[in-house]
Image 1 (spheres, rainbow, N blue to C red):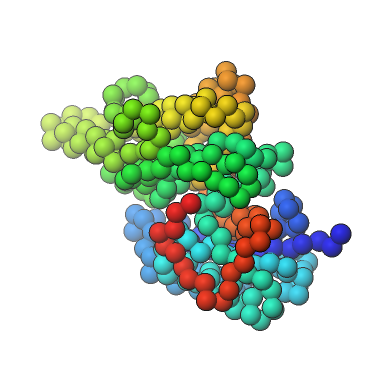
Image 2 (tube, rainbow, N blue to C red):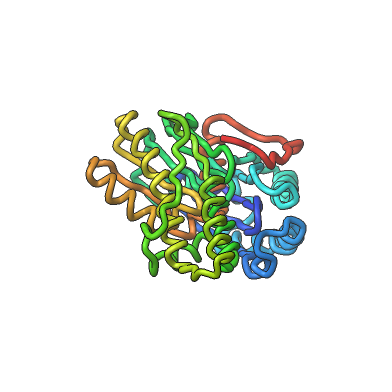
Length: 336
C-alpha cells in the first residue's frame, strides 16, 4: 500500500503551525511558531499583529516541515487547513497559503473545523481510541460537550452561552495581574491555595441542561476582588485562583459525568487548551475510575492549537468523501 501524506496548516489565532501526518495516525512533524511573548505585552492577542506574524512564519514553516519529514511537495496527497473558527485575518493567512500550495502542486485541499480538530488530537495521542465516546472540548473561545458517534458524526449536547471556560481563566488572570495566557498561570498559583476558601457560584442553568455559563462566575470573582480592595483587605491570590478553578472544574465534571451516565459510553476524552489543566484531569481521573470509564486526553503540545490535529481532522473528512475548492472562505464563527 502506498503511504498517504497529509499536511496540516493551522493559523486560527496566534500560533503558526504546520504538521505532516503519514497515513492515519502516524505524526511525522508537528511545528509550532508561538507568538505568546509578543502578545503577553498587551495582555491578550492583538489580531492585526497576529496575522502579520503568520505571514512571516508560514512559508518557512512549510519548507521546514517537508525537510524534517524528508519529503517534497510532490509527495503530499492532501492539504488540510483550518477554515474556522478563529480570527479573520489569521485564518486568511493559512487558507491563502493552502490554496497557493494546492494550485501549485495540484494537491487536493480540505477546510477543517478547528474545534473538531481538538477532538481529533486524541486520536493521535491515543492510538486505541475509537468512537463512540463522550468528549468535552474546553478552549479559550469554546466549551462543548459532545457525543462522538463515529469518526464523522458529532452530536453537540451542550455548549457555552456566554464566556467559555478558557476565556474566563484569561479574564480572571488579567484581573489578578498574572498576565497572559491565564490558564497555565492560574493552574500553577492554585496549587498554593485553598480551593474551598471562597464560595464562588457553580452555575448549572436549567434542570437537565448540558449548556455552560461562566460569565456569572467571572463577575463574582471580579466583584470579590473589588470589594476586598475597597475595604483595604488583603486578597490572597492563591485562594482566589484555587477557588475559581475549583468552581469551573466542578461544573465541567458534573455535567460531563451526567452525560456519560446517560449514554452508557465507557470512554471519555478531554480536548482543547484547558484540557491541559492539572486539576481538571485529576478530578476526571478520580470520578471516571469509580465508573470504570477510560479517560483520554492529549499531551500538552496537542492540547493547545497545533496543525497535527488539523491534519487528522482533514484526513477523516477527506476519507468521508469531502473536498474543498479554491473558492473556500474563512468562517470566523464556525460551530461544530
